[in-house]
Length: 126
Image 1 (cartoon, rainbow, N blue to C red):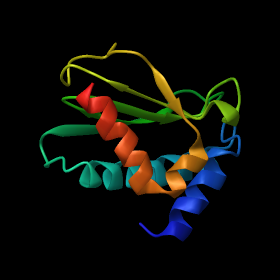
Image 2: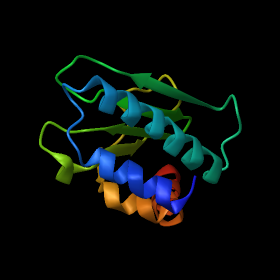
Image 3: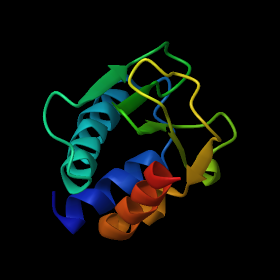
Image 4: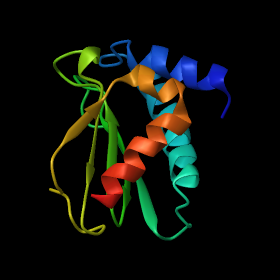
């Protein structure tokens, strides 16, 4: 995924995609690509993580989730607006849906994907 593509996803993430199925579909398509890149940069092997896309209802973005043994990353637009960013947290296995402390990252932090992955790795080590 190129910097240009990541920048386009960040712009989309900062646009309200609810009530627009075309934008919502694109948010999920691009979001799945982003979490695949994150999984690869984290060194996760196929079969050791899940990627889920929940389109949810018309009034929200739904979410794209990367769920591995020690990390849970959920890309979705908050009802509080784009400034909230997206959620990530440490978890204890792929059947742990509550995890540890919720952390939030600004969408713009994904532009430096390697730095964002470093934060995810630190969370996995705690």
